[in-house]
Length: 69
Image (cartoon, rainbow, N blue to C red; front, side, top):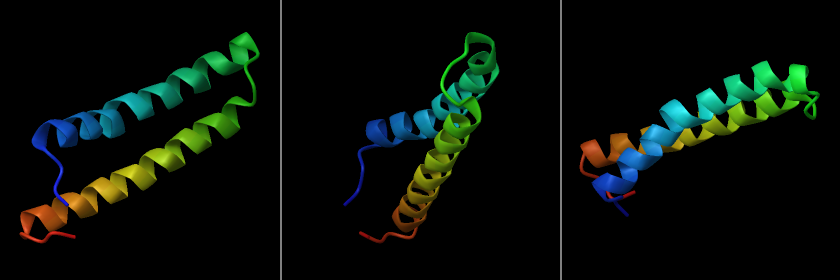
């Protein structure tokens, strides 16, 4: 299955920009505002971001070599 370019670009933007920015924002504001366990939330966001980045990277690699998987 191949993703349309628009979907790929949106996912890439979310993975490369939005999730890391959200992790930094939560990590910086969390302690000041008393939000729930900022360290745990930042680690969770970061781990999800790395996982999604790996999946997108594998998908991009398969697309570039002409595979369908």
